[in-house]
Amino acid sequence: MTPKGPCEEWKVALSAYLDGEGPTACVVEHLRECESCRRWVADVEWDERLVRETLSVDGQPKFVDDVMAEVRRIAAAEPLPGPAAWLPRRFRWAEMAALAAVAALLIAIVAPLFMGVRANAAKTLCLNNARLVAYATRVYANDHWDHMPSGDRWDRSLRPYVHSELVFYCPAPNGMLYGFPAELSGESLQAMVYPSATLTLFDQGPRPGDFAPRHHGVGSVAFLDGHVTALPSLPDLPGISRPAGPASSAAHGRSAGPPE
Image (tube, rainbow, N blue to C red):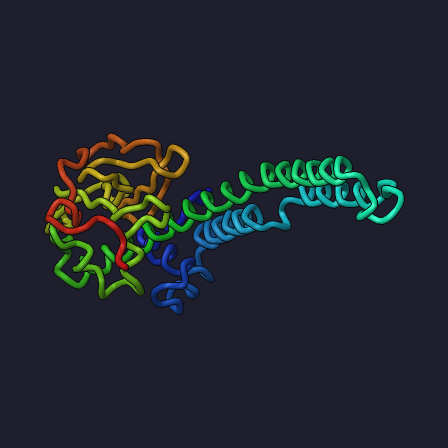
């Protein structure tokens, strides 16, 4: 029977390949030979396509049709007789009030739509940031004798492994520096027997170590094997414990906000 997921040892490399990061030749060669990994990559690309279609304005045909129907109805309405300058003041004020009501109605319809699109875009970008940082953490460990970065300066340690330091921050309007579990500081990968159940990164709140579900009740969480997900709270998983304190900038006297 064909496995439902990708090969365990190729998960991090496949995630980087989907994000356009890291070497691609070896991944492409592996995809030619492994059907399970090939199916998994196809499923992920299909999910990303659905997200793009959801965020596209073209994905709201009914809303556009309703607005255009209202415009045609107003244009087809019987015009008032005579030049506008000859109309009594009460008619001009009534017309302006009607136009203001229509404008207010359109704003009330459109504003939540664009706010929702913006929030969904921030959530998607936040998950992508978490995936990039999780991959950078594994690459750092490979370059440093299988040891994790030091907790009090984890973001500075990983800076050479990412294209921009902005990936260390949640892109939401109230986003902050991601949290890094203190018990992983300088820890050896050999001690982490459950990579898929080892928390390496999470959406952090104003207080160090607090989880912040700022994306409509969920927050981004990354694991040592490279997979990321959005959860309403930090999970209690076998083999690990809840973060005792973050190795974040706020815990060491630095601003938790994104760089200028």
